[in-house]
Image 1 (cartoon, rainbow, N blue to C red):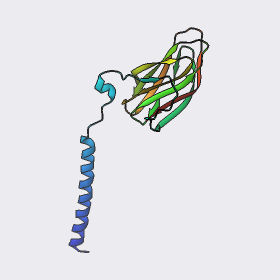
Image 2: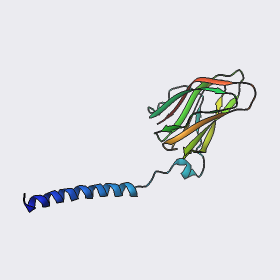
Image 3: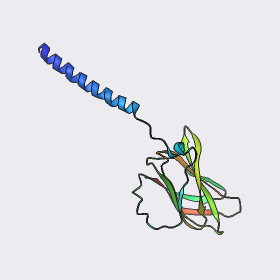
Image 4: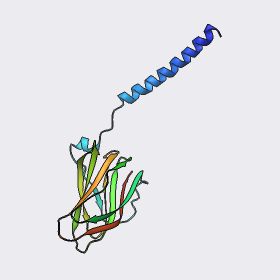
Length: 162
């Protein structure tokens, strides 16, 4: 093997390294997408619906988790990772008394939750709340109601992102 061969190999390897360096530099200098809560300077208001009608503008969820609810005063759903830019929760609740309860969305970073915002859910019937533009990440839903001796239940809680 002569010097020409080694020069070609060296040139080829240098091109590969230069390409990798350009890609790495682009990744480092690319702006991080801001979360809606950072842009607004606070919480993100949820979009709340009390109808189960199909939402034509809603694409298929990226992350989807199902769970049950038995709410006496406070119920913590597990911390879950959502890979979409938007996060939602929906359920059909049942309770011996009418009224509402609160569902709060917390963004969890390094084990610490920060409130995004809250939505009011009906104790009887279907409710859906979505938070748009909050970004992918780990979130936790927390349900709260006064201690009135009534239990709110649901066996079809869906938490998802898109």
